[in-house]
Length: 395
Image 1 (tube, helix red, strand yellow):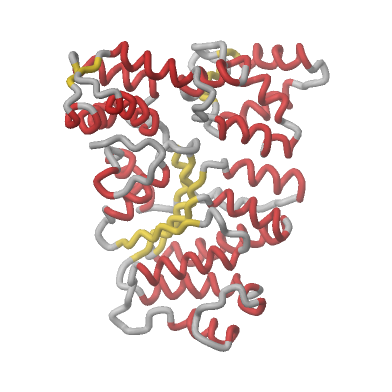
Image 2: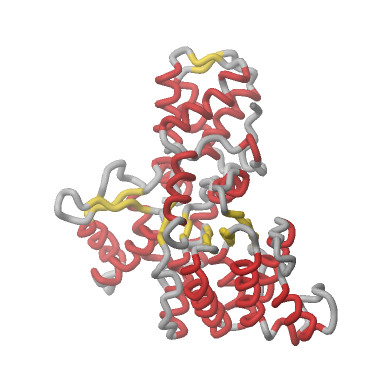
């Protein structure tokens, strides 16, 4: 199989993740899920695989809302995806309520979602849509809304925080009303941490809601060693690139890439493009070290720009950068007390509580990993590869 890092992955091109998929389905049997991960870790691929391999009695609806700027855009995307999935009812009354409501508002068939009278009635239309799905379709629905946090940011930026907060509360009300039927579940997915959105709304706009506190937080990280081995077979063995010692090559691939599928593909693409006939562990080191030092490789630039953008909204960007710069020099865990000392060296006005808040945000946002086994809080970069990139390009 040809490696295609960064390209769309569908069908058989989605390798592995069976364990994560099983865990996700298990959680969805009981409640809805917030799916979180760093950009390009494989969230959308996991959702696509879920849609391709549904459990009996469920129809997954993958809804993309990255460009949505108003709640009605989300309602429209949900309606369109449900229609495309042909969630027809044997009773012949599919979409009866929402069609009737829309035609009353829009004076015609469903088409012009941007009509002012339709746009302003988004809350009722969303509820009617979910009610139609629950009561009239032959299967249950898993509504998977991808890039949900970004949509909330966009709504707040374009129409004000009040509308964003209304949408979050309305969606929670709809979920709580209909999820008890066990006919519908939601997966809210995104790479911009949802906690950042809530932090913005709470600190700057006095938001009191807890729109996802009844949902399970599922953090997607790198693949396990078995899936890393599977990718090596697909991208190396099947392409005629012999691993001199298969176990050690797979182990080095896993260690250097943290099992992140995108970066495994980058290594395999480099080997394929070089027409290599064999590979040893040192080849993986050489390829990754060369790419990490290349300023044209923008692997973790999104993560850096998130500090400069979203963290700056709270005035946390300088503290976050100091913390990440310091931790980029540490391969092992680093004590929280030492992190506080580092920040205060450059900013004597910084308080331990303020530094701790930023550390917690960075941890929730998948930059950092926490360890308390020694009795004190310690942190390191979640991904070794990100630490190396940050040390070279930011620290």
